[in-house]
Image (cartoon, rainbow, N blue to C red; front, side, top):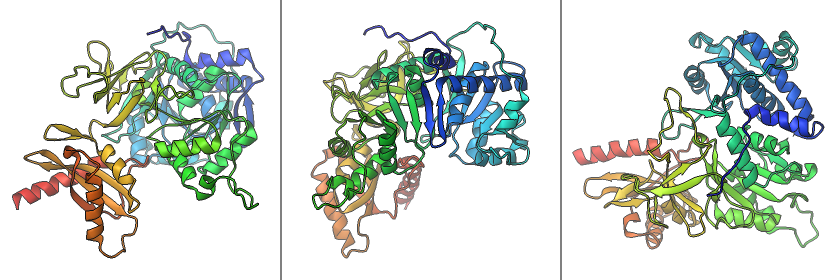
Length: 536
């Protein structure tokens, strides 16, 4: 494997480097205007000065809500520049989740929007370490009681002065980010400056970012991956908080975006829009949705699987590649990305980003699988976390391989096919069944609006395929006949171990806020029902 090189800098050093190289270049653009790299760097200095004044020491943990605005970027780098750790607080979580994050990470100061500040203030008596809540989105100074407006907080600190040199260790903790908690209680992941700088360089290389790039961020929150990679490259980042994909395309056109980052759900919405799918009309009527932004070179999707059909349709309509990647919080997060040149293979999440190794191993024995075989995905590289909160190091084997908990296989072109989560797959007669693979077959049936597959406990075979379906027309006569026909058609395309043996009609598939099926709660319910049936 070729040696992958990245700078031995603190993460905030990437911002300083970009500001020195081209101080007048656009760093962040929003509906309110733009900040140059020099302005963003100076704003980060203000945050650092406030924290040095308020804390009086280095090494504290400071909460920051990753809202999609320019203040996040300044606060993010300012926290790191002050010698403290940034703790990402998802502004979309509820009070209990927010309290859990602050308790586990021992947050002392928090930079958050008004709505999050209200939740923190209400629970302040249960957070004895939290000494200040700073509201980032209240320019008029109206904030919840016991909170501080950002303008007041920054004005309290002395003006930034030339910083004295402090010995730098790239393995110092830079960030604590919490997992989504889809398979259990969210865990705090400790990421170092090395992890994040390396992954910024890896992402910039994989996505072909440079100083001429304009990245449009159309995500619900501000993920550090997109900020760090843009700053690493010296690119301009445009923030688009609108959930409407048409608005993102229009903004991409107006701002000259070269890269558009968005969610699979938004791309699916765009692909499903009949006006867009039909393309320009031949009847002289205006096309209701914007076409391809002039400078756009690629659309990039992440967070969950992107349907290949959606990717193909949008690539055809927009005239640019529509790609996806793969990663997780523990890996800073990116490990794989499809390439604009198509070399990473159709239907995959792409090849490893530079400096990253990937293999699949048997889920129980850990023995590496033969090429093309399915097993647990394992990764190693400089972006691997320092560990979880309360643990001394990352959970790796003797050779440094980290097991992701995902099941997949590596194709002949080197692309990784992610099949399912290890927690979600189950065995029928010792054969692994992937719920996602079964669901993919059913998704092509127009009689089904939505579906979910989990294992029904069985003392003989291990588990049977249980299918919950939401019918496209639940009021149509002959529902049982429709179900029988749906199952018969699906089973004709499935292997012996994947055969659907139990089916039920659902009003809706239970899903997480991220849109993933709530399989864990379904498994618990089915285990109780199976036990009751066995006892009857």
